[in-house]
Structures are given as structure tokens and as C-alpha cells.
Image 1 (spheres, protein in one colour):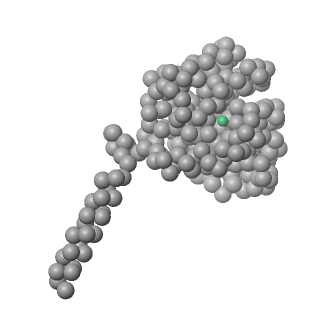
Image 2: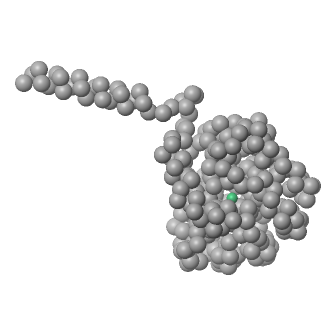
Image 3: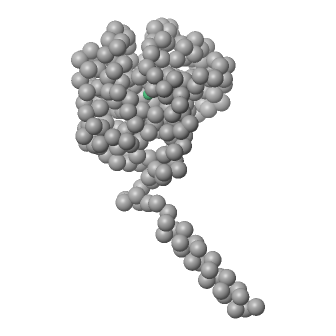
Length: 262
Ligand SMILES: [Zn+2]
């Protein structure tokens, strides 16, 4: 009987030790993306990516060292960010709404978006909003070489800054939210820090209604929240005035990224 208990204990210890041995750890002990997480990130939205001319994002936030994923938690304010990589269908309404509420907002756009819609970029910049780097061609950064990553950043910077007369540094947003510690280091060497989000409004999902996107935002409000929306989605422009009005009535200040980090 006693012998059985001892053997069982040894076996249990070996199993636990084995589990720890195989647990993937990054070289610095920092949080790394496991293949399972990677799978979650790239699927199932992958299919939608093609439908939506590749302007989509993951709904799976996780913490990476050196990355911004929330603004100042001590202030009752919400950071609104708009990614541009596909269409510009909500651009004018976003800008009108920002003007109406007297707000400065934050945009992450690709170089290709800027090539396709230079007037939109100029309008955003002329209205005093922030424009940061969303790469040139919206690639899966985890699947290309360091050299290609660097090219994605610098090409976007060249095109966008040529239109805005100002740099896209020091922030970037990874396409599809797909990044890891190594990509952050490459980006950092070029002067860019990754910005994630606390809430993906899911405006880009084909089956979402305006009501669902609004509720998604309202049910995820907290100090310093970073909301992800998209320039290329119709719902964004439709609901923004109502969303801003409600948040302001609830006592939230709506801010851009720089202000929201202070
Ligand atoms: Zn994007």
C-alpha cells in the first residue's frame, strides 16, 4: 500500500516536471506567442481578410512586454483608434463627427491606403489628428523576414510622411494584431512602439450589426480603454456620433493616443 503511494508520487512528479520542461519559454523569460495562440490569431479571421480586402484585426488581446495596450487607467477617458488598410468609406463621417465633438483622434494607416486615398490622408492630418504606421502592405509580420519587416515600415513612413509632412513615428499597429517579441524589437530598432487595444469593436466583421458594435463598445468601457475601429467599415461612420454622445454624457473624455497615455 505504502509502496504504491510512493510510486504514484514519483510518477506524478515526473509528469509535472515533464510539463514544465516542455513549456515554451522565450529566451528572456518574456511572454511569447505559442503556436496555439498564433493559430487563434491568424484564424478564423483569415477568411474574412480576403473578403474585406485584408483590413481586419484579431479579437485575442494578450500582453507583450514593451507594448501599449491601454491608456492611463487613472483617467476617465477613452482612446479611439481607426485602422485604415482597405476602403475609406467612413473617413468623411469620422472626420465630421470628430469636428462636431471637437476631438483629436488616432489613425493607423498603411502605405497602400495612403497611395490610394492621398486626399483622405491630407484631410486627416489637416484636421490635427494623429497618423501612425500600419505597415505598407498589411502583411502577416510573423511570416516575413526582418528585412521585409523593415521595408514595410520605411515604405509606409515615406509615403505617409510625404503627404502629412510629419513622421508616423513613434507608434505602429501590427496588421491583424499579429506580432511577437521579435517583431517588436525590429520595430523598436526603427523607432516604433506597438499599440494594441483593449477592445476590438468588431465593426469589420461582416455579420455584425450597428447595434452589436455599439453594445460591444459600451460593455467594455474602462478608464484608458483603447477602442479599435476601421476607416473602411460603414458601421463606424454610422454610429460614431451616437457613441461619442453617449460616452460624453456618461462622463468620459474621448481622446487620441498621445493624450490618452498621459
Ligand atoms: Zn489593419
